[in-house]
Length: 274
Image 1 (cartoon, rainbow, N blue to C red):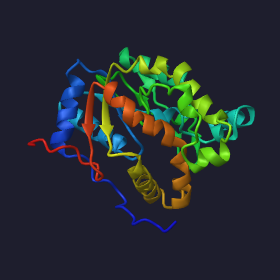
Image 2: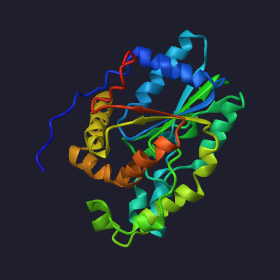
Image 3: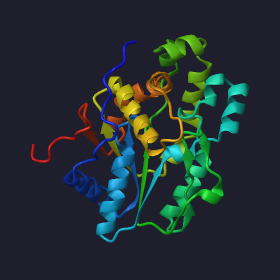
């Protein structure tokens, strides 16, 4: 495969008027937990940081969390890889998160209590020890972002045919994808029930995700120049772990989210004066 043109190394962030509009939506229900969904590279973390800063200017204490903060540790995923399927050793897809911990942290914050916020080191592929988790005091607004928030499981028949090389070559019998789908049905509804309002940042399709995810990796590498992030080839393989649920999310979430915002290939939302 010939290399694609490299996108810019860092997304500039969303227009401040757009951020203000999302913040107004988040506060319209009295604060609490506000969920932001969007495929990999959409800019969810960037938007969350901008919302925290914008909230601060209004005297609102906001805390940002990502479902990525709740990945299972490497040992736990390796155990799943041995016991269920080798692909479960790779973080990200449904079934590789500590859902109970996510529920516990959200409950504390939503209840006005201080909480320790888990952090995951993506380059080292491990959760940081609790002694290194930042402490958050009682928050007026909790921003929770993730790529598959509130995505329902697929029908079993939809799992029969592999949709990419990873599934065809490494999950030919569908054991991994069935496990992920069953986890969506079994484990995650408890977490989804804690997300009363969801905004979906809807990209133009899954085809832009490899470029967007590669941009994320370059930004991560630039922030940690002495460490080694993923190569482009590794990113191309990595996004295949997310393709099935991502494509399902693009179809399902507009019917689930309270608000859907369409983004173009440059991650630009509609102009506010259109």
